[in-house]
Image 1 (cartoon, rainbow, N blue to C red):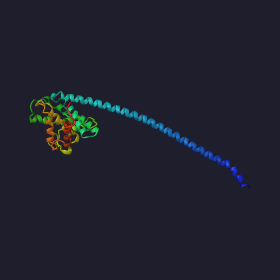
Image 2: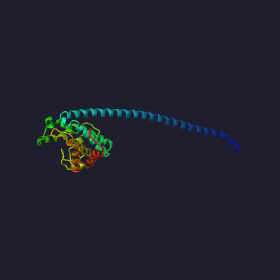
Image 3: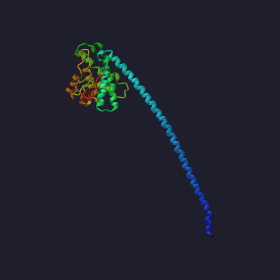
Length: 255
């Protein structure tokens, strides 16, 4: 028997098997390519949908910011019509507090939260009789006790509003002092929110610089002397330093 003929006879079969294997490999590659193409197309569709969702979310957030701004403007107007001597006070405090926070290099979202709280920090005064707020003399102990309720009342007004920052707590604490002598809770040191400590400095400086029903404006140097004298006693040291730097080195002025 000639084995060479057997080998030759079998050769086409082996060759066909090789070709079939190659065809299967090519088919598999084609399927994988198609699957990959379909996956890419699906990812593209998801990316488009995601971008549309992000745009819709951004638009909703912008609408919410505008609506919140309108509400805040109404609150400011309601408070200031009751006490014309403090007209513009909340906005000026907000501007200074925001600038102090920026000077301290706090994160942008924290700075914005302080600005928002500053604009409405005296909202609780809406419950104080106008004749008390505009009294052309220093308040009696009973009247002063009444005025001292405004941070807590402000907190109650704001606590259920869904701000993106702890605005109600900042408003609640803006009359607290570092040594515990403030109100309404007598908090001290680290128990007071950093944002509220900044707000406290801005509030005091603006108040001293502005006219009140019972006195004339005392000026910025008097205000800076006050916060420097009681640095780390009544007022947060870092906030005081930042505030002084703004007026003496950065040329900050109230608008």
